[in-house]
Length: 153
Image (cartoon, rainbow, N blue to C red; front, side):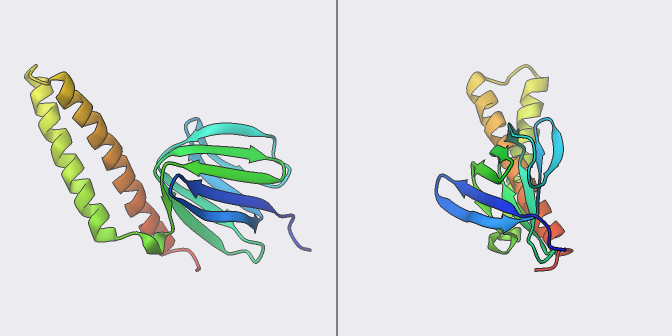
């Protein structure tokens, strides 16, 4: 018996990664927690946390896409991911992501030291928030690459 499929689209401002791909399941991390969507799912819209979106094709293969945040809309016959940025694991330069993680961690450490001394300016606080975003994106990219190694491609 074949599973019921629905369409998956994953896009960002600069690219369309997947457009109306038939899938049997989609999973992601929303701001309210992890979820899995199947055909005929109740409609909802939620923010996405940086991390991976996984999807299963009709032949049973699970695939991953790294997203750095955005939104996901689930409808009974379609799931649309509107990501800040998105990429397949094989498009990720893991070493570059690790260097980005290290740079972000260093900036955060410096900002926390200044904050502890009461010397953090509003501009430095804004830079700290940017470093937090960069850290989450780098961690999501690294995790997606690691996790993809256990998936069949």
